[in-house]
Amino acid sequence: MEQNKLATHIRSILLISLFNSMNRKTIVVVFAVLVWMTSCTGPDENAVSNNPAAEGFNQANSDPAAVELADSIMVAMGGWKNWQDTRYISWNFFGFRNLVWDKHQQLARIESLRDSITFVVDLKNLSGKVWVKDQLITEPDSLKKMLQKAKSIWINDSYWLVMPFKLKDTGVTLKYLGEDTLMNGDRCNLLQMTFEDVGDTPQNKYLVYVDLKDNLVKQWAYFSNSTQDSANFVRPWDNYKKYGKIWLSADRSDSSGPRNVSVAQTLKEKLFTDLQ
Image (cartoon, rainbow, N blue to C red; front, side, top):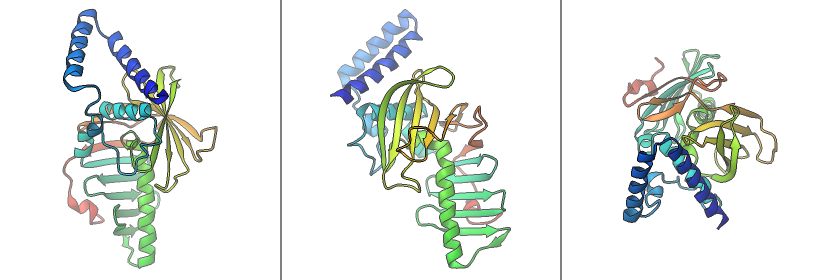
């Protein structure tokens, strides 16, 4: 019952924020439409189908209010269908690495600029190729270790870019922690993400700060261990732009994370097979 009250509270906040930005005539029209929609379809009828959870998402132990907020974030970022339809995402990570991700085939190309290593890896089965200073690695054990390293790099670097799309991933539990304040003073809703038996570091914890006005993630806090009271860091998640049909945060105000982001529906297949 208390969790359902939290969900209702969030809906109320969102509606108040919306109405405050409208004139009286617009409010009357919007209210009439909302009443008509409710009478025809009922509330939240399509919420699950519009943002289905990945298999293994911890629905049972996640707050309904937190799940509803995660769904609202997905809508604000462009929607689940547009996210699914997006094929290629490219970015630079902190100036250290260039990455290209084929979401549909789950392939990644990673160019490590500091040590002149290029990885092309199938993220599903850890097959692929690795070049060190233009020399192809052929020894099986060395290749296996390098491909495992490539996947770990991809897990880390992609999370800094697409975390808001992964709130209902396998192994995730979401908790709603109430309202809070961003570093810039704006009000926000606060989500907690914890993990179980997934990824390289399931002991991590994140706090995700969601702007009350637009439902976009605007800040995040990282805890290397979920038992910690103090975060390892708190950073902005800002400077949103539309890439293709989705919204991403890059070139952030603290110069952290992803840069030079691009989204495409077609790229040369040789990116995932050849060095050049």
